[in-house]
Image 1 (cartoon, rainbow, N blue to C red):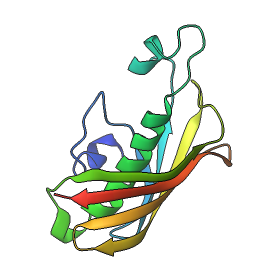
Image 2: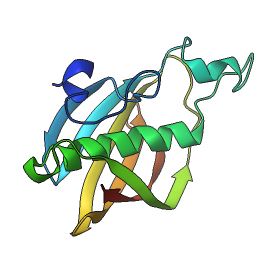
Image 3: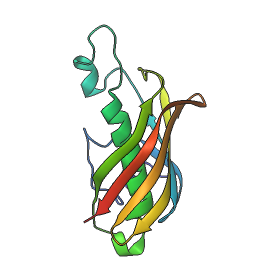
Length: 140
């Protein structure tokens, strides 16, 4: 299990935009499983939405992307680099994510060619899918 400080040794994101709290497992270049504990003090809940806090879909997607970045940037040849979005495809949101939820974030790298790749991404709460899609990345 990697904590936030260990995650920061792999990916460049920092608070308040570090969107994963711990990594359960990862295989460099292949996959990663991470968690985000969603709490009512998150900065985005102040405006999304007052009195009815819902985690924005783009931030669920970012959490998944950071999980995938752990898998890609933990590869020896990618240490010290960054993984940028190249595209988001087939992303579907199936359930709201609210304070108190624990997001399980799973990304499997399904294609790589040079610095470009695609990750199959799934976010779950209590074993129910809340979001899934494909994320294209570019390592720079």
